[in-house]
Image 1 (cartoon, helix red, strand yellow):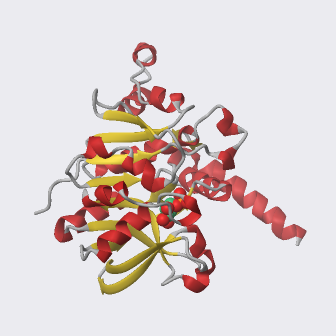
Image 2 (cartoon, helix red, strand yellow; image 1 turned 90 degrees about the horizontal axis):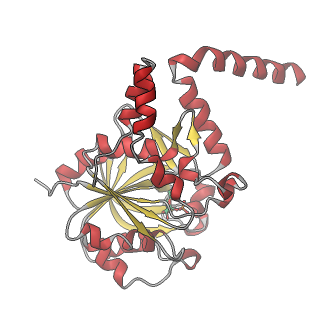
Length: 297
Ligand code: G1P
């Protein structure tokens, strides 16, 4: 039986420049897919996997994110008075327990590995999860829960894995695999953002990790890697070099890259179409515009 994973790190210090001008005033993580901020999807997934302590690595200008997690007693009072019980329940489901959230500042944008390292004192000597909220995963069983179940069997560190177009390897951490066992692959290496001709495979890391505390120790001494940044991938690759087990978990689910505009729009459509109250209108609209497209061809 492995030590239980109860803490998760959410690196949210990025400036979100791809979403300017919106991100001038609104942190990217508070932008909404349908009616829920991106970060809420990440929190819900973490909770489903048994996480009870949430560590946000933030930066200047992320105040709206902290406000989002405050309880809203005035709003709750108004909704109760007006008998809007459904909305009240929705609101309450986003409430976080007092003391369950911690915020740490990443003072300089030195990379994902550095962001995770900033939370080291709050993690201590325990295994922990990392969730990148840009990667939104629609799945019957939430991705981190799938990984947690596998981790309980195997121990070691684990990353979510998905095949990507071979031409796109330079956007991802890429896995060098040895043994396959069902949806788990044992890793013999990992490389951050290799050019397609240098990539060991087209199996990419997606933003979910379960990591042993030794990864944090590796980060202590790590030099900048790809893109001049301190890379989490390099700290995990060191685990493999030092003969500790690391696995890739081919999760079941659909991943949306909400760090890109196209991915964000696709996720908006997918989550919109999955909603009973929106499906008909949205579906009819999509149908009408695709018909117009066809007619124009
Ligand atoms: C980060 C990681 C990369 C991973 C990717 C998944 O890169 O460094 O290994 O494949 O997330 O989304 P980023 O997208 O932050 O450049």
